[in-house]
Length: 51
Image 1 (spheres, helix red, strand yellow):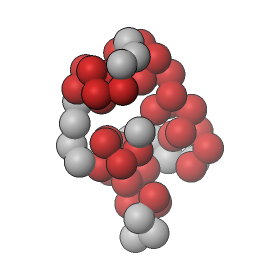
Image 2: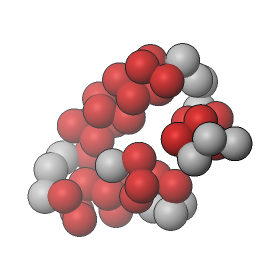
Image 3: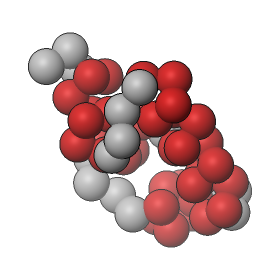
Image 4: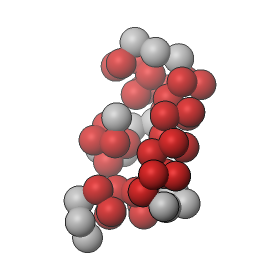
């Protein structure tokens, strides 16, 4: 899911690709943010790619 976020896709687009609801995408993304100790998409993507 973080890969799709890194590609710049919107939550709606991620949901469509994964066959889940937008709400589920939001929940997963916010949990990922918590685990990475980040506040937003940019920080998450940078942490994911080790920047």
